[in-house]
Image (cartoon, rainbow, N blue to C red):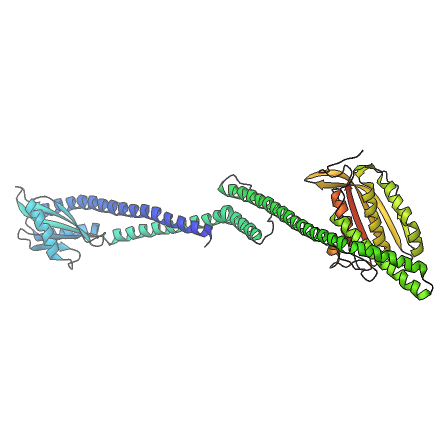
Length: 496
């Protein structure tokens, strides 16, 4: 049930109780006033009738008494007049004889015995008669009998009922008007704001941010709306904080997983270096000697394969060692464009053989960057080698440099962004999140080890930077590296 309807019912009940009580009081007061008015009327009329009947009775002529009664009845036919003798015998009357004469004699006997007029109401709530009885006396004041005036109360009762109906109708109209007014006011001032609040609560419960309410009123409803807005804002802040904490936790978990992999990788690298390092060098040396001394082409071809594969194994072991025993970067101010240009020149011959064009965008002026030049060269070298490996002959690689900002612990700092874009085969969205994991490769048939991008991420993170990729099948790839201009905030050594 709506609040406005409840308020209307409560107000109607209170109105009926208060106004009805007042109406009943007025009705009782009206009944009392009618009784008083009838009493005054009966006393006045009764006194006049008493004098007229006494005058006729003193002459001792019953005909005179009847004539007097007939004259009085013509003047006011509402009254019934009865004359009784000393022994309470009915000697004359006018009007209705169907009255209860026993009751009437009782009243007149009382008036006769006490010797003065007596007024009584017979029946309840003006539903019967009013009787006025007065003793009759002669010239010596001796009692001759009694005269009784009987007045029916039907007209008074009808007046009282009309008054009651008028009061009831007034109460009903007033209650209906108050109920309608209360319902309208309740719906406007209570129902509508509560409906808006309920809708906002449902939106909030569904997990979405509800629109803020507009507290235009300075009352309890306006206060509730304002408190709700503050609650929504608090929940939004809490959700944002929880999301940030969840993201930080996921990042920490990912970091711990990477550390666990690196620890395992370190143990593997140490074991490989110890177990196969020396035998591998011996095999590689013997293969080279065999290649130099071979007299036939088939033996020389097998020796070439042997030398190539042992060199590849040696390179993999070396890369594992670099990841497991990463050398701390030696920071110094450097021109990052100059470092990248050296890498492009280094790969220029290889790129020309594959028919790949490498373009370095070196127009935008950039400030010097605090970084390790050798490690930045290694990052660029790995990214460019991967780009060339992903393309067929006639491809195009573009290296772009630009200034950007990086959020570090809630503070923005200037950084340089390196973007390496290629027109290669691209990477699907299922594979893209895994490309920086150690030993994950999509080029195992071409000799990929899955360590190049893992090394890139490790080196970039040691500089306090970030690296990510954008790609799609058949759309090429874009690798973005962001390096803070002033290096990481936690660096232990800076060389100027």
